[in-house]
Image 1 (cartoon, rainbow, N blue to C red):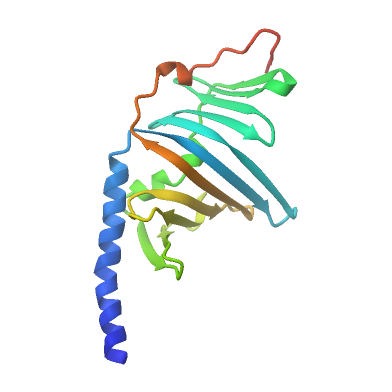
Image 2 (image 1 turned 90 degrees about the vertical axis):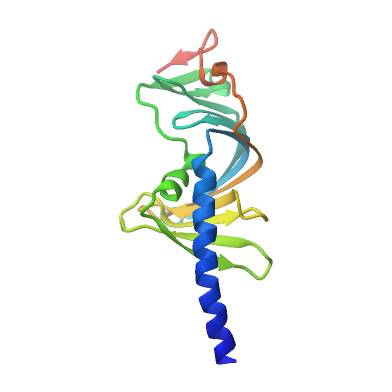
Length: 197
C-alpha cells in the first residue's frame, strides 16, 4: 500500500510539471482573446459581495474593451493612449491618461513568468486546480488559483485575494482564442451630452 502511494506521488510530480509547462507555452501563443465573464468580489472587512457580468475583447498586451451588462451597464475601453470608463445611465465618462491592465486577464503575468511555480490539485469532481506560487509575499494576486478546462489547456476561472482581504473570482466563458479584432473596438468617443471628467 505504501509502495503504491509512493509510486503514485513520484509519477504525479513529473506529470504536474509537464502540465504547468504546457499551460504556460499555450498562453505564450495568446495574442487576442474575447468572450463572456462573471466577476464576484467579496470583502471580508465590509461583509459585502458584488457580482458583475458582461463581455470582453482584448489584444495583448494592453488594449481591451469590457462591456458590463449587469448589475448596470458600463463600458471600459483601453486604447493606445487612454483608459475610458463610460456610465450610460449617468451620461458620464471618466478619462485616465494611463491605461491599466485588464483585471480579467490578471492571471497572465504570473502564468507567463518563468520564475513562477505551481502546485496541481485534482478535485474529486474531475476539475483541475493550479495553485500558483510566487516568491513575492506582497504580490497583488495572493493565493492565486486557476481552474482549467477539461483538456487542461485553458483557464476557465481564476481566484485570488488582494492585500486588503478582498477576494476576486472570475469565470471566463465562450472564449475565442486569437480572433481578428477590429481597431474600432478599442476606441471610444463620448456620446453627445456626456459629462467628461
